[in-house]
Image (cartoon, rainbow, N blue to C red; front, side):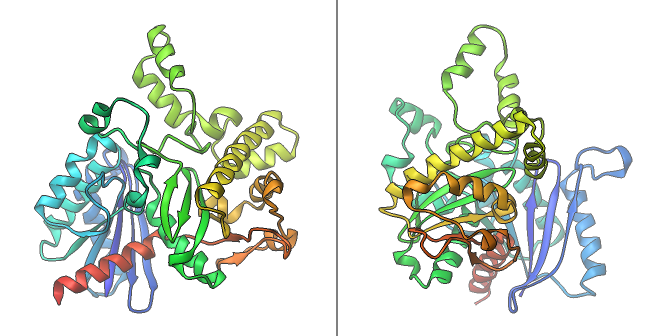
Length: 381
């Protein structure tokens, strides 16, 4: 089955076509600056989809798309697994937009654009939050008045679930452990970053919360901080809520501390003696070390610590820095294994490490394509 995987952002649209029979990626691309009509950029997602269709006709040589899978950031409490899209599902995703105002409206725009072009092609929504629907209430509840949860939906949702789910299965397989018995701490480290506690192959806690701002230090996001910082600055009249939302989401994290959100540049600057870059790495590594320690307890003793995504897979320097702070857990890396580059899942810990440390490349598009083919196949059957 040929599956088109769509990741619609507020101003960009990434796509990939996969042949799920052989697991092969046939083509991929990116349409940028949607809504910026200057310079011939697409005016809206419908025009962006039209450009994708034009590219696919040329690149696929006339082969037709059998199904379309969409990455949808927020599924709220309703969606615990991928679903076939119809009008009611589209409206449900749209109603969740207040929880993901930059992402869900863009996903809906992509869904409707596909519907307008290929009305008979099955579409599937795969939710970033779905993997975390197994988190127990004591972990997803915030200690705030009950009305904030019941009336406003204020609770921990978690994100990057498709990646955490995919990597969990690959890590368990690499170690020869049945997924249903697997306990791990999985760190998805990219410009956005989150860490998940996995017990019995399922998510039981995760660092991102009501929004993707909570948790680890990220490229431009602050991660955890005292909420009173926000309320105090607003009450003093120093900043508006909009100012702080922008600062905490777009100007904080590595960028706020070191002046750039590019981990490679931060690592290079620290190695050259830049104090701000060194501090940024120390803060980011320490935050992750604390989460790993806490989640080691949460899962009842991790059988693996797993690094994935752009930084997790490629920055041997940051992996080393994190591991050096986990000596109390008996963690030790094999220096040469940590330095090695590979697109294959691998163990990078020393033979005497109390907990194996793994690098497992993520492939969210492959997981979305698999789920899409499965659901679309059932619909045809």
